[in-house]
Every structure is written in structure tokens, then in C-alpha cells.
Length: 198
Image (cartoon, rainbow, N blue to C red; front, side):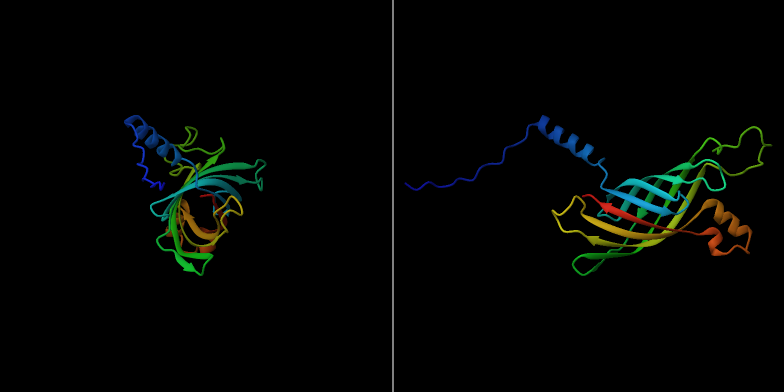
């Protein structure tokens, strides 16, 4: 006797199950997609954080915690940074490498120390300081190269090396008012690694 295999009809989800699946998908979007380590860039000597990529991996959002060792000051300090990155192009370099010739974006950096303030304290005359000593707004441009790792060999999908040139609001204003400043006086160079999880 010959048995015919009949196609199994996909089980339809109830309205409750559909809502539950959508609910799970929303929470899964909050899971960070990568980790990032950055050296310098006016956000700390070393910064470590998490991030999310979206819109066909052209946009990324980083959240970083930075560390500033005690140099001239007696106390080490920490910073908190929220960074928005944009990568318009990705150029394949063979089977394992990709190159992004332009990375650009902006970030806000907060110095986590009580000695620094967002609004001028009352002990100073009104308008004495027109800027915040706690918050800095930055823009940057750079490049990135990525190595795709073999699947199933580890728990990272790829590793990227990047560099960036950045400046902040206060540095730009000083540059406009002082033509004797050189690029090293208002630009910061940073390097970093990005470990893509999934």
C-alpha cells in the first residue's frame, strides 16, 4: 500500500498568540547587537559600551561609559556618552573583509563628576560662564574595516577596527575666535574595536 504525503497546513495563530509574538519582537529589538571599545575621542582614555544597528546597518546608536585617569587632578573621572553613527557605503574587499570609507555622526558626552555643572552655579556673576562644563556636543568623521568571522567558531559574527577625527562645540567656537589654533588644538583622534554579536 502506497501512502501519499499530504502537505501539513501551517498552524494559524490565534489573535492572542499574534499579539504575544509582536510583544516579544518589540522586546528583542532592545537587545544590544554589538559591543564597542574606544580609545580617546574626548570621552575618556578608554570607553566601553553597547550598541544597536538598524536601517540596513547604515545607522548605529552607541551607549558608552568612559574612564579618565587622574592626571593633573587627584581623582579619576567617568563619562557617559550617547553616540549616533551613520555609514552610507560598504565596499566588499574579497570574501572576508568589508570597508566603510565614510563614518560620520554626532555624540553627547556627560562628565560624571560633581565638580562640573550643566548650569552656571549662583556663586558666579550672571553670564560669567556661557557654556556648561559637564556637557559637550561632538561631531566626527572616520573610516572602518570589518573582518567577518567564521560562523559557529565563536560567539561574534565580525570584528571591526575604526578610527575617527572629532571635535566638540567648545573647540569649534574657540577655533572661530582664534585663527592661531592648529588642528591638533581642536581635533581629537580616536581608535576602536566593534564586536558584532548578531
